[in-house]
Image (tube, each protein chain N blue to C red):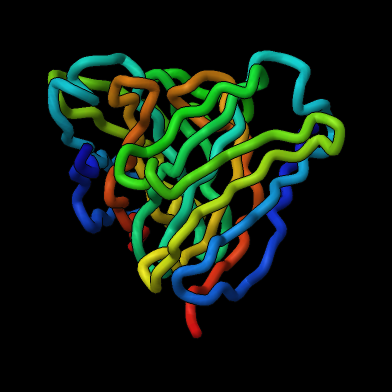
Length: 119
Length: 110
């Protein structure tokens, strides 16, 4: 079955760009009509949807983060990525990648990776 | 786009039924039949339990059910078991290809 695994630096300095990659295994990222999403969760708090990319490359972002977020896909590596610019301490969170069969729900999640923003 | 409103906590005894509410607006919960629910145990990733208001993914117990009335969606867990103790999050389509989550509810099995 499809599995997702997040990877990237666990520590990012304020004002820099957070970069994470999600590697998809057990299936091709470009097969089927799936959306590939990013969600985050600050410690002790709720989930926040960041955005998604479709297999065609089209993207949708949370309006509150849109100016700082870029999601891209690399089908040759079976990966999709998240870049969040100008980070502050408020961006410290566990970041999850997930597969979405439809825009409205996510059925397979990665285990999550913790990113801390600190100097 | 504001987070959906969920009670901070609910509790119940084994064997009982509990219901978790998720209140939004006509722009999200009330406007679409696209509410999903996720279960999250401590330190684990969320797990999809319900989608499209009341549909259960394969492998999810039929003790979990979902419904919606107006701007409020609900998740009901019947025959409560110790393993159901977790955080639960609702999520709704909010138009313009976006989704919004609820603040989460901590379920305690007494």
